[in-house]
Structure formats: C-alpha cells, structure tokens
Amino acid sequence: MKLTQIAIFVLIGISLSGCDNLFKGESKSMAPAPKKTIDIAVTSLAIKSDPVCGMTLKQGEVADTAIYQSKIYGFCGTGCKEEFVKTPNQYLTQQ
Image (cartoon, rainbow, N blue to C red; front, top):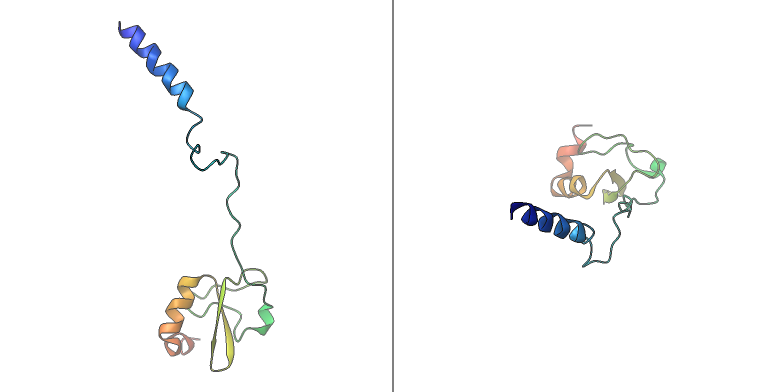
C-alpha cells in the first residue's frame, strides 16, 4: 500500500514538473529582460556621476535624467532621480 502511494506521488510529480510557466506560455530558458538605459552622452551631463549615490556613470549606464537649473544630471536608477528631485541642493552641495 505504501509503495503504491509513493509511486502515485512520483508519477504526479513527473507529469506536473513542466507546468510552472503554463499560464504565461513562457519557456524556462527565457533570458531576463535587459536593463533599460537612456542613450545620452555622458559628456553632456553636468557631472559624470550620480549625484545621489556617487556611482560613476559610463556610456550606456544612465538609467534616468533630470534637469535642474538648466543642467542635465544623470542617475543610475529612477530611485536616485526621485531622491534628487525632492531636494536637489542637498545633493549638489555634497559635490
């Protein structure tokens, strides 16, 4: 009896093992979505680093921008931009 129950659970497990993406129709081998960046020359930024976190920005790594006092500032992510927009002078006086 116990062996029969184990066999049933094993068969059910094998038959359901490929169903985790059934509802979305996705394959397990899908690559993660690429990180989205803005196509902007780093040389056009007021400073070459994220004013909030200090990360040095390289070409292809700018995720968001903001304009403050006619200057363009680049950010590594939208979270840093949101913090900057709240109190930009706080971050610019740290430079």
